[in-house]
Length: 373
Ligand SMILES: [Zn+2]
Image (cartoon, rainbow, N blue to C red):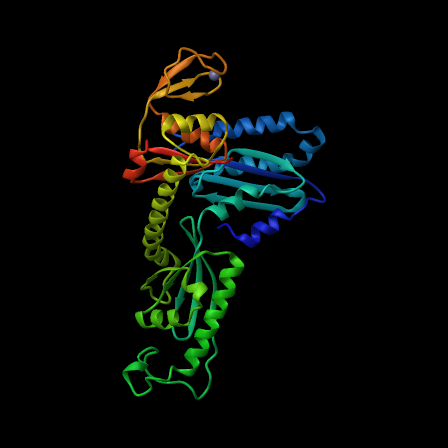
């Protein structure tokens, strides 16, 4: 999983004694119907061999071979984006199999190329999950469909203060007003650790899990800034395995993201209406792609549109033309314009949001984009 601290360390590394090879490969099946990312990969390797200074190439030959071995023998691990950073002279190797596509790039430099990874961290929300009971707490991070356990909070018991019975069953008896001393200390501990964890990791959203009583008590103790980050609570067993936890948490995340997506589509349409760095409709999007202005592309899933493509420069247009207006190249009719537009946007490093269902976006032309400038 991508980790802010780790990425910062990578970004700050300098190959005093050598070079880094950074590979970004779009392996998304949507863009590579017949696994043709291998063609792009081989082209990038060939370009590297031809364009890099001979002495440097000799130094990174090992790394390029290692990268090639990984790409050819680990296809079953691929999701949508593959990133590898390798430096044999610095004994460094890192691979990321991401569930978002990346722009194809192969970079050889004195420093690792981590900027696109940073951008993914900033653009795709990470969620913290807090599981809590009377003696312990566990903190997880969920990002792009993966879950990682980050830490545990155990507060040592205070002798002589231990009470029998359930943790939050106190309100049913005469101890009603006395929250168990040890539990109170533990919760305070949890709340403090959570606070510092959330700010240190720049995590914007939180899901809390535990028994009903635990959830109520913990929510009562959280600071306002943390409460604002809570998107939902879920009943989860304290010692649940990570894959059970993600199963319970994923519907909450999806519901939240769907809502965010609707808000974004509303904003997109509003901005496009005002002509403020946003466009809707296929032809407008195609024009923006031609000018390399697309920052984030939205389109309705499985939407089909026909149009024209220039066979020599790749110009896309809805307008019927006899020859390309840019290069006079030959024009071909195609019926999968949305796919071509998405592919072009990915090549330009734009973010892509496939909207599952949106009458608003559909009515606005089924496609739109936020622009860079
Ligand atoms: Zn052309």
